Image 1 (cartoon, rainbow, N blue to C red):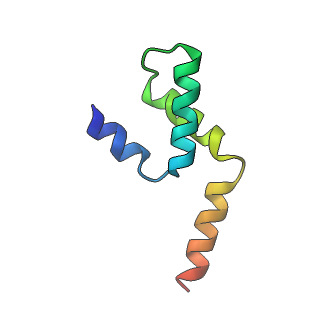
Image 2: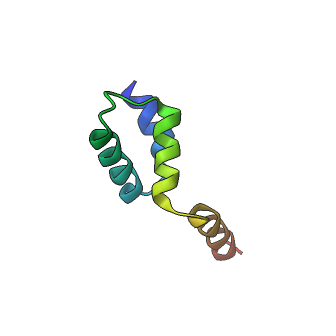
Length: 62
């Protein structure tokens, strides 16, 4: 199970994963589903950060 979580979360920044982890611990969830946790990670990242990162990566490879 840990390997699946690691594979799914590797594309997200560590700061967002840590923030979502703290939310899960403080919220009292024993173990949130992977989908719910990824939703929290995306919320922790902020709006359009992943889209901007993808655009910058594309520009750098040109």
